[in-house]
Length: 315
Length: 225
Ligand code: SF4
Ligand code: SF4
Image (spheres, rainbow over the protein chains, first blue to last red):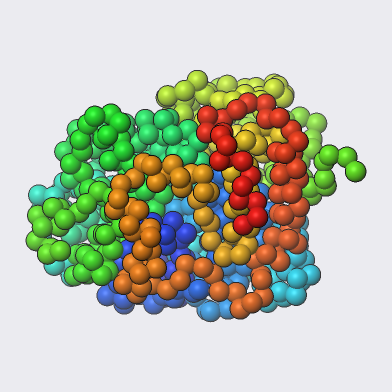
């Protein structure tokens, strides 16, 4: 298990996410805003590619191709001297960790990937065994923020008291490499802890807290009814727990809740008074960010205007 | 030449072995320590599985059939209900991973031309990825999202570049200094060869089962992207 005192705040490669970029770009700008405020040394590189995770879990990408693309991104981190790869998305997190473990432990994989690099004249991408560690070099943004929770609480400018907040932790962060997550995978509390430090009224447990969001990669597209059934179960239990705000740590989950909540309301003839945002957007707000110019709430499907005015943020 | 083309990549995800369980253990997609032989049929996977909650999919049974070397399991349509949420992987007391097993079974199915109707809408994905270094939701699915979501989403999508620049963010696509790195890597690793094989199979083979989204626009229209 990762220990909080070992979470780095230097040399962070903030790993861009394809779904953050095109659906909720405000998650990225909120993260860089919060990182700057908290004095975290990070880099965003336009050489970094997407992790292939969507393709992998759409059953299209194979493990070797995914590992080769990951090795290229590891070279980007190495060349820039920012080797603490920190993701905005839980799929990027688990995909990169697995690729790194394979490159270190499986000689055939490493040799194959490296020979492809050399044959293409891309010798600078060659991956040296154990040049990165699959535990110590890979983080999710939520871990970095958790390591700064006290400071975030101290700098918080918003009165969140009385706001019922619940967390949806992303499956691929804590269920795949569960030994490496911070805390107990049967009851993840990373987001809860950060929200608490800002004085929110946190609902630590609700029915089905650890149930998937329902997106299931291709499921929302290919098995839409099944996918929405699962999401509805969670929305119902959040409603029963009287939750006002759900905090997320993965753009895929956020799409599933924020974009599909109105769809479920329509199809099931129900109504949820619940809004959604990423934990980085929440922290940025707490640290004084502009809801439009930094948090980018404009791209959300469930409008946040009423919620923001309730907590005294002018829109 | 016969219908099937060489595909070195399938050796890694679905290595040919004497038994299904051996293929699962040897596959690069599964963890080295996967405990499939240790499965005690306790059902913790099924009882925590969201797909089992709403469909007749049953991960415990899938594992049983794999251990019995019942090859027909790859034709069982229920395996396509898995969410890849890894709850079974977390809960299993024997370090087995039904979801990783199912991923291997699905790759085996795909190699036989099963489920290609679901896969073929993705055939533009690899090319987009090679060119821009980003993943894109396939056009067919975006069409459905357009129907589902309201005007706010449509407007923002039209306006993505200006929204991003207002937030101080740069372009979405990867910069690779003209080296065509990603394409060269995918080419060298054999990704496009495999994709060619799948495309060819999708053209010539009749899928064994039809998915409910398969329709005219699901054809391989984005091939040339
Ligand atoms: S939880 Fe593990 S041991 Fe129990 S039935 Fe499922 S795979 Fe077998
Ligand atoms: S990963 Fe698949 S089999 Fe495992 S619990 Fe989730 S839906 Fe069920």
